[in-house]
Length: 257
Image 1 (cartoon, rainbow, N blue to C red):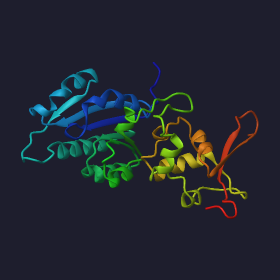
Image 2: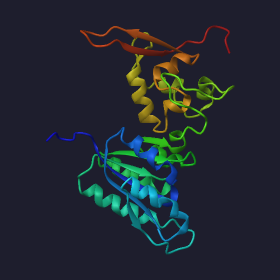
Image 3: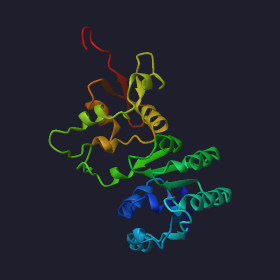
Image 4: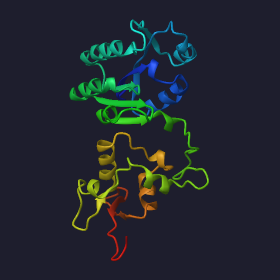
């Protein structure tokens, strides 16, 4: 029997702080990072506001964990989810955790899991506090899973609404981490070029929420080539390896703004 070598993931969903409508897309995204060996959703399932979850729990084989709301106005699932996460962490059976919530209360949990050497993938809405986003190795905004802006993946370029180009969106995004100070932290050669793979790794490490698809692209090389401040160069590799892509920040011409 073939051995499954994909990372083993524990998926923990704060159902009181997540939308059931994105669950199918969520697990499609999670499949890119590994195999969900544990799937649990936490909430007070006697609450009518969670009624819409029933079909998704069945369809995705998610185990519902009941946590009664002992105090009005408080998210009852936080403590139970954190305790379960620590039990799973100490079992040493997993390679990573997927934490689905927009609640900053899970920031210490994400930090603790990473300290143990495991990957943490966060999933939440854009309102998620930056502390939680930064505590994850990778953070995916759930709005991007459903393309609310009309972005539809297609080849290197996605279709966008009229008057809203991916380049404009990239330039306007405060979290697009392709700036002078970030390029300075990436290993450069004597001519100021950096491997595209190093740039990609840097973006993922320093900015967990960065997503190429948010800007209407499926490849970082295409996004950078369309930005006015960067050059892309293809260099031959040794032996029969495919050519490598390099990027550099273009120097401003004299007199330019």
